[in-house]
Image (cartoon, rainbow, N blue to C red; front, side):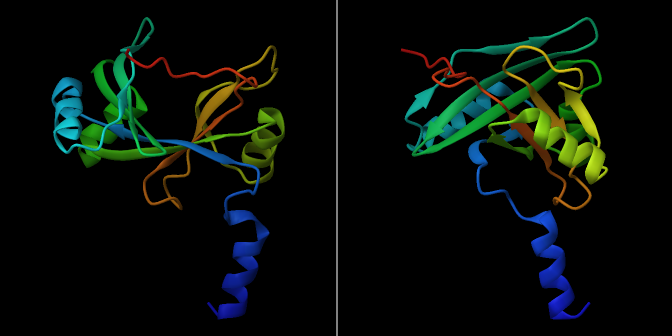
Length: 165
């Protein structure tokens, strides 16, 4: 592909949008406690969140956020069931599986990604939208270096992370 064609492809929308704010990098781990201990032993972790539990009838995950400088790292350990985290662990091993951004208008971004670009919603909010706090994982693995895209519309003033005291 010629350089000019690559530039046009880039400008058509494959770049990050200006109003998206990086919230965290999500990682899948086999052992949550050992992973938290490892990162703390590196001397860079400033804060650790309280335990997160994502559980439904078919699946369960345990997680924690770590604050490293201005970066949040989210760690998820699959416990049971078929989840994108378990699939990642089974096929790729431990590592980064998603990048998460805070956005202003989830519905607008959903329409752009799913309806205009054909990117599949893997998990999360889909139309009709109601209330606040929509979020979703979008399947950008093929073009996004095996990482998912998470978009979150968080109401102003609401911190979704509860830090240990």
